[in-house]
Amino acid sequence: MAVLLLALLALQLFDHGSAKLLDTNCAPFVEYGLRIIGGEDAQNFYTPWIASLYNSTKDFRGAGTLIHKRFVLTCAHVLQGNPEFVRLGEKDRSCITSNCSVVKEYSVDLAIKHPDYFFQFPVHKNDVAILKLNVDVEYNEFIKPICIIVDEEVNLADINQIQAFGWGITQAHKKKASDTLKTINLQLQSPLECLRSVQVNSTDEQFCARSPTGGDTCYGDSGGPVAGNYMYEGQSRYVQMGIVSFGSLSCNKSAIYTNVTSHRNWILTVLQTHGRQLLLGLETFPGVN
Image (cartoon, rainbow, N blue to C red; front, top):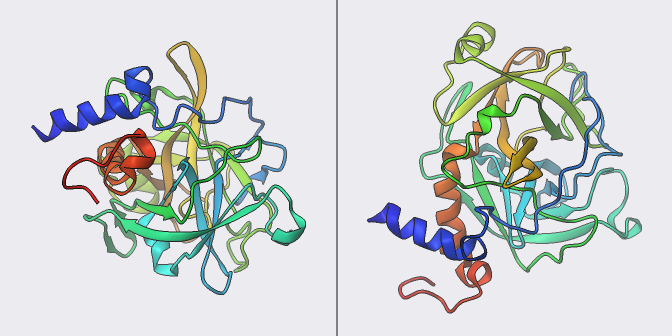
C-alpha cells in the first residue's frame, strides 16, 4: 500500500505523470570538458545546480545540489559541520557575495538526515541528507536544479562517463579547500575494485568509481554531485546519480559514492512530507503539516 501511495503522489508531483523528474525545470545537458585532485577548473562548465554550504561563521562545510526550489541534496556526514547557509550560483568562493551579483544566499530552515545513516570509520552508509531552505529559490540562467530521474525503470548504471564536482582540497597534504569549483571524470568500478583499493565493501546503496587518468575526490568535496549525461524521453539530460561520500586517505584511489537512485523513494518522501504544498501546488494532504 505504501508503494502504491508513493506512486500516486509521484504522478501528481511530476507534471501529472508526464516525465518522472524531480523538477521538470532542471538544467539542460551541456557538453562537458575534461575533468578535486588531478581535476580541472569547472569555471566554464554549466553548473547552475551546484550549492556551497557554510556554517554560522561562514566557514565552508561542503557541497550539495539544488534539486527543487526549496531543497538541496547533500551527504549526511556534512551535517556534522552544522551548515546554516547555502549559496547558489557560486563557482569562485573567494568572490564576496555582495560583489557577485549572480550568487544568492539562503538560510537552512531544516536539515534532514537519512534515518539509517551509519558511520564507523571509514565507512558511511546511507550517507544522504536534504536541506530545506527558508524561502523558494527563483530560477534563472545561473541557478537551476539538477535533473533527478525517479522513474524506477531507468538504470543509470548505463551512463559510461560521469563527473564529480566540488571545492575540496587539490593536494592531499594540504588542508585548505579550493576557492574555485573543480570537476573530474570518473568511471564506474566493480565493488571488488573498491575492496582491493580502499579495503571497503560497497553496498547496494553505494557505488564505486575511480578517475581513469589519476586524481580523486578528496576532503571538502563531500556532498557534491556525481552526474552524467543520460537520454531520457528523447532528450539529453544531465542527471545526478551519486553524492561524494568517502574514499582513501591519500585521495588517489577508487572512492565510494552514495547512490542517489537507491535513495529516490526516501528523497520523494522527504519532499512530499516537508514541502507538499510547494511541490504539488495543492492543499496540504490530511495529516501532513
